[in-house]
Length: 271
Image (cartoon, rainbow, N blue to C red; front, side, top):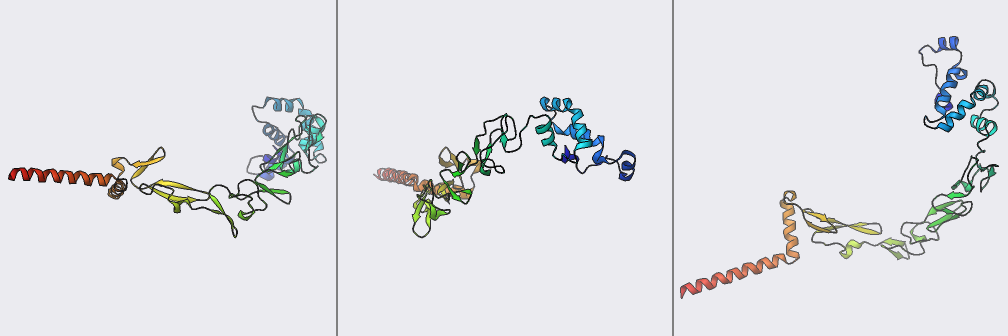
């Protein structure tokens, strides 16, 4: 509520008149009411009930104490109502979270119950970190000062340093080079796709088989597209594909057989 109302006024157009007649907005009861209205979500019954129960204390702080007690949350939640703990502490007795006073969980995780009277203080570490205070790196990450950085995508598991040269083992789709470390394998050079109906697209550590024009994906294979989707260029591609899979040879054989039968009929007629 304080941040939302920090630079507001009474809402009228004549600021000088408003301040002469109504006083400074910053210290006005109007602002106090707006702050209270914006402090709790509308459906948070517990929060709104607490504000109602401590309305007199809040008014006292707003008009008399806030010059000395500048942090409302600390004054109200920790000192007055005593339902919260200082940041980086947890539990009924406000014990210190693992880590240090300024960085709970080493700054790389969340302390369970941080700032509340609940929780067990255990650290939920960020990705790449592990340990009771998130002080170590997990597999696939490398220590760099106090940070854990991910090993290169070409690494299979751990690494000795950042980059493809630091990989202990190359991941699938990559091969080791003394000069460059793990380098991408271009599967398209080895005809990884069905060249008759697919175009091969190389990607880092893998490849993609895309259907040629005139074909569409059906399951894991490319089949001729629906007739109304095929243009002349696509039809030529389909015809070429049929020749490569033997269909064209069968058509030629059929035509040859028909020609032989026609020759036999002509010969019989001449006799």
